[in-house]
Image 1 (cartoon, one colour):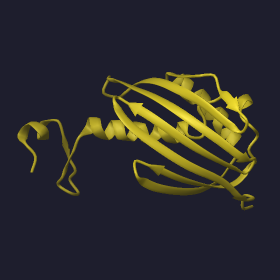
Image 2: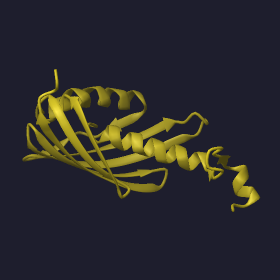
Image 3: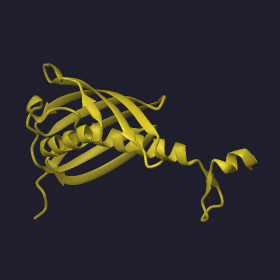
Image 4: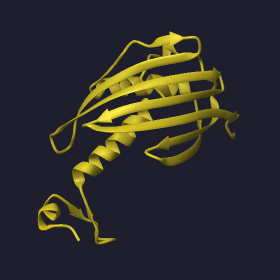
Length: 162
């Protein structure tokens, strides 16, 4: 049972009868979106090695939850598109620092929410490229004061189905 005051700032889910906090839901959703979009790419495509197009497996760990996806994609092309979208959304990307096969960069974002509030996020990413078919990514982010971590392992597992 939650207090009347908490109910006023909440939305009841008619399917479960439980109360959800819209701001927390928005922050969690946007953080997940930022992490997933930042994960593949807050850097300029020219700064990254060419990653092969094909069927890729992505194993992510976000806030202790494991998420595995497989998709036919071109990570390098996806990175180009995502950088452009993030910059249009109000994100500033740092220059990429490269040391061997390790790339580091940050992203600072200020995004207008549907409620009119501005959400801020800062992420620091370390991308380790093992080959044109494999890389690892570590993202540490703070969104509106809430810290989060994402770890991802990406491997090309074959050609795309025809």
